[in-house]
Image (cartoon, rainbow, N blue to C red):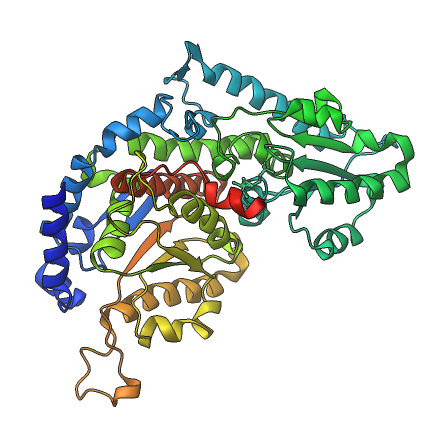
Length: 491
Ligand code: F6P
């Protein structure tokens, strides 16, 4: 593996001054050769400095790191979270009927289906009013109280899928700052509101403090009937019942689901209530489509693998320390925050699985904002700063606002033009502009494109990022599934 690593380092050095645009000039097929699509999701990495030779070395690196074997171990329930002795089975939360997952002799997908069915009954009951508020009327709002993995997923997805929401509106409270819950509850009526306390451990100070505030708010209006307005999502049933939440209102999950990978199951309850079980099922199907691609596709058609290899190239061989996530999709405004936890909590590690210091850089710094807003702020640095920041653009062919098609056309044009401008700069201008107006170009980007931001597509996007994190962690030999750094912060 060291030989391949050294070879890639030499390659990166050799091509560092090569204009990316020259790769297009030399190869009319570059776009089709350096992009891949699966079930409508396109990952285009042609606007990077990767050539065929580099790509094959990166693929050899993945083989040498036994990425496929590590992937199979994860999907089949081996305890790959070695520091905590746990399986890592968020993929079993989007169960493929043809793929049982055996853990300690039992097919865990059976329990997953039962749990999904319970969530669906609850969500349907709330949505059709058969599970009513204390006064017998239907709920109109649901407040999810949780933080980190018990908040970011459903909060990000609820915003992303807002065209699918109704009749119950979701709200999210995470911060210990009382302003967060005060501002959220200020607009809500306790007699119409269901509160879900989401905490895997049911020990997190932010969540329990906000839960106490919400319970007091409910009690003031509803008296002892407040319990009808409460539910919990947790792996700690003894703690939820000690808190006074009826067991039939508690949605549990196993310790083989990490917080930041948990929105596919009970942590997604607020999302399921908001978008409905059918849309939630589409969301799971989207993730399943990428699971299948990751498991079965050849390296040249394997989206998560290719996406990860591009990430490794930029991080470990080109030396770029950050990656910018730039959704040209306002409803993906929370995606960068979601990915900060997914990527940085998973791969911000300095120790290999066997307890040694890592020999290379691990997880990069992830940041970003939706376009076009970012264009009027930090894109100055992207275009002319002294650091190179690989960009990840996300764009839909079609919006949910047919009456505003002209706006979506402008949005798309901006997205595509930015990736081109980052790559080309003013290199082809003659005469060359003065230095302060010159853009060197040669700044790489990946573009992820899809037809429309639907539940299925969102499931694909999140699974794509999850598996990219997995592949990168597997190549570095780290455990992407513990988070002792954050545990220290909690103390
Ligand atoms: O802050 C660390 C962390 O454990 C995250 O990984 C997790 O998502 C979050 O806290 C919330 O934890 P819990 O769901 O147990 O309240």
